[in-house]
Length: 59
Image 1 (cartoon, helix red, strand yellow):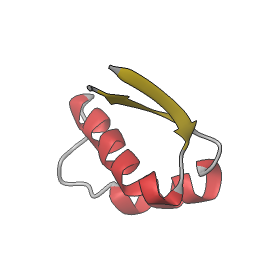
Image 2 (cartoon, rainbow, N blue to C red; image 1 turned 180 degrees about the vertical axis):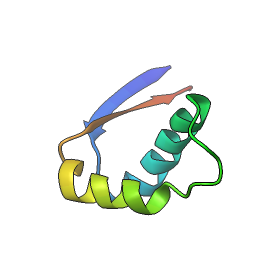
Image 3 (cartoon, one colour; image 1 turned 30 degrees about the vertical axis):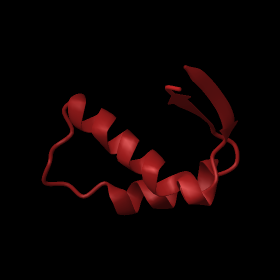
């Protein structure tokens, strides 16, 4: 298994948002609220290029 660290790019944003929504749902966020627009706006304005994401791959 390899762990790869790299900066979040716009190409990764949709995947990252889906992962974040999954986490929020597990922590109790309501299903009837569409979080995608707010999260996309937030990460685009504040964090894109500053967040480091971790990908784990099994080889």
